[in-house]
Amino acid sequence: MISRRYLVRRILLLVTVMWTAASINFFIPKLSPRDPIRERLMLAATQGGRNQTGLEAMVEAYNQQFGLDQPLWKQYLTAMLKVVRFDYGYSISQYPRTVNSIIKDALPWTLGLGLMSILIAFVIGTLLGALLGWPRCPRWLRIFVPASMLTSAVPAFVLGFLLIYLFAFQLKIFPLSGAYSRTATPEWSLEFALDIAKHAFLPACALVLFQLGGQALQMRSLMVMTVGEDYITFAEAKGLRPRRIFARYAVRNAMLPQVTGLVMSLGTFVFSTVLVETLFAYPGLGGLINGSIQVLDYNLLYGITMILVFAVCIATLIVDLIYPLLDPRIRYEKG
Picture (cartoon, rainbow, N blue to C red):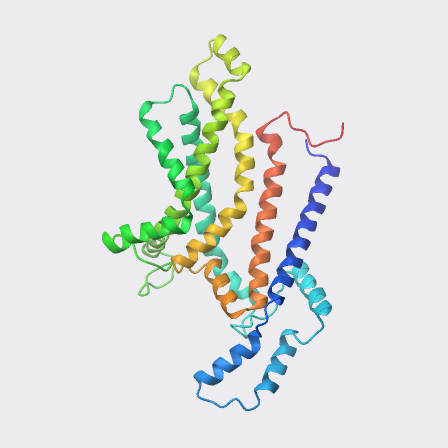
């Protein structure tokens, strides 16, 4: 059971984490000596072959538009209010588009790629690790132990490079980059869905392989410790079927630390997803983050980072609240 007092404490902790992340996210870009408005206007004037007469007036006007002419404390308060309202204003690099509209276009791609990858890696890695840690495990499965060690030690973007070289350059089975073919028309059809799946296969494989090895090794170690517990010996002495002991006694008791490890790795997985999306030119949040850093688009960078922090915090809260379902011994209540 979950008490109201505990739920309030967890929500207050989530708000504190969000406020801290928002503050850090606000002040770090301000440390840069670059002026994104001036750089963008000078680049536009140079590419258009125009002189730079009136540049200072334009810079001042754009600074007023984006609130960059205000004192730092006023900019900070405005940024905090934007976090509460989930409204991050206009993008500096893609003006007059709003940050919310840009994120809205890119977020479904990241959610589809990231969520599917982490769920597949967690399910397969947990099952594989449980089998590897079970004494009656077939010998041929043990070849996955060194393979899991290898994939867990290699970063996701390096795995992405290897997959691109093997399946895109050499075998030419999958496309190099993008989310769908340039000649394809976005529509609700089976052909377009298959085209999306074909483009997402390599980045998804890079993320799954990166996460799967660690999940399998962690579950294997948890199963080895769980198998040595007294209740497992007692269940075997009672003559229970090995399948029941494996599923209901060993795996179920090893799942709680496994879920905890998954939550702790969410931050690393989000960072890996961003790098893999950038590598494959996938139209998700990864490419937006890379572009916003290059042009120092404060508002866009601020909005994307806060969305990612909020997603990790919410996922952590949800997993924390479902712990009692995984282990009935856990009670979030007074007394």
